[in-house]
Image (cartoon, rainbow, N blue to C red; front, side, top):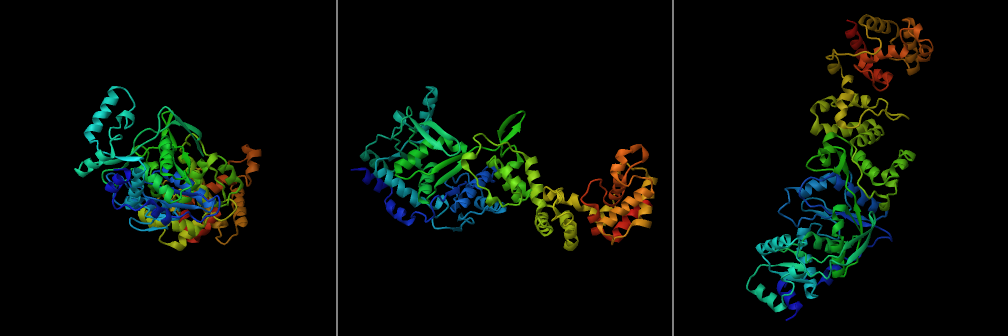
Length: 548
């Protein structure tokens, strides 16, 4: 009996690997095109670090006219959560990162290199496992869980490296006949790789991000097919990336230590090895030190956090691009209106140590992003967000025509307003524009001019003599100057600064009285534009309430 007899007994129905090699031919792409993927397990929410990998992988594929696909690695079915695949797909969609190929729902997919869900590729893995057994490069292992636990205990007691290797690999040296006999009498088994590696030898590898790395060879006889017939992550990864013609594996650096094993698997299977790029994690400051952004400790680790807060997807993606390449920030300053697609991302310019998470930076980027939106875009985004997260804001936005006027204030000009960083800020940013809300607010804090009688005098004179809703902006501002002068204030700020003892204040102080009386705030977008939106009736109503 030989290895082929053993392989036929274990996998009698497996097709020859040539069938799959022909079924999944080389992709017809231009030279230099990158094919990469996001390959999550459907075991919980999508982490910001995973989104970071997606942004980078998708960008590298896009800028080389390559392919970015979504493969779901669901071979560990005990940890799978309900609707886990839907959660992954929706998270990518929420951030405008839809893949070119792969899963599009729990059961649907697009692309010619599927199935893109590993649990549906069982026959493929078994074909390649059978091929390895035929070559004498894999074997059935009959060790029970109890035997493996006992072996591990002995290794720990002896303070030696744990694992199934060398003299500890009990089933490695079974003859074909012995293995066949055990299978025929019904002994349960798994399939292990027969590693040719030696721990005392080193492998050298060039990682696109980390540079040159060195590790001991893999000498562990790892499990490649589990008792349920499904593969382990390591084996499935090699088979899938070969058949899907992945050129670059872009993933978190927690996988860097698996490089010796993965390179070995590709070599033993006779596959061309993809290039590897291991991304450093996003870090967070904690009590003076640094740690990885944590699913358990940090709400902002979940990508759903940004959706719930109403931070636009464009801002999150731009932030991740910002930490990916140090030259992005200077590029953005030089190209403020360019699309992200125009930036040339370089993997070898990525940080070897982890970037520090900075929510302030995200919100600053978000202010810039929102400032470039049209009033219609702000309305649509905010309205859609409010439908789920803020019933009060939704009510304010019900009158679309009026809301668009409000959102159009200081928008679309050379220096647009930057007071909104997320949709959850919007209600507070616009609520004073609604009479019903504003007229119930009796807590007004004025600036330098804060005596009630003086405030009344300013407002009464303004209404009687200077207020005309039809004034152009310059005429309006000239009237504020005239009002200031008539009441004994400096009509120009520079006049006041030259001789501050001469006046009780200046035109800016007078306009602040008007601003607070109409908005309840000392700092707002352009007051003239606000007044144009409020209209004559609302302005008179607000001023008269204070004068009374």
